[in-house]
Length: 145
Image (spheres, rainbow, N blue to C red):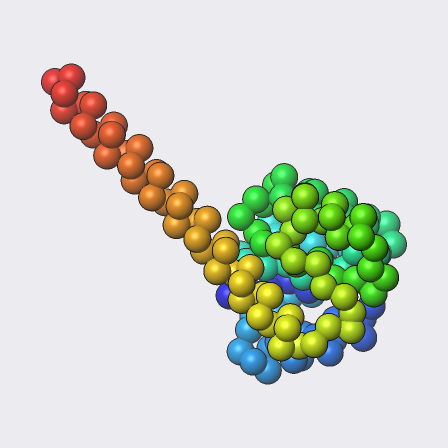
């Protein structure tokens, strides 16, 4: 499972990356929107942990773009200043969870695991659908011969 941590707080990125890597996870970091999209295009990322408030592109704007361009990537929103509206918007836009800093590392790990499993289920559904379509095409081609 590969994880991308996104936050403009370098201290948070450093500490969280060490804690997750210590538990055996492949962790990348980014501190702004352009870095996020650069890494998503180059690396296979399963879960993005995304800060809501950042300079430049907000976490909500980044979430929208991730879901538009990388729909199978699962996103967990993280904020130090929670609001009901932001939480609701995040979940409506496709984030799986909305966590509040400071976040307990075990809670974060659990949410990351859940997000990864959700992504795996979606990928399996897509593969199953592709197989059914191929099988139908084969049957149709045999019938028309």
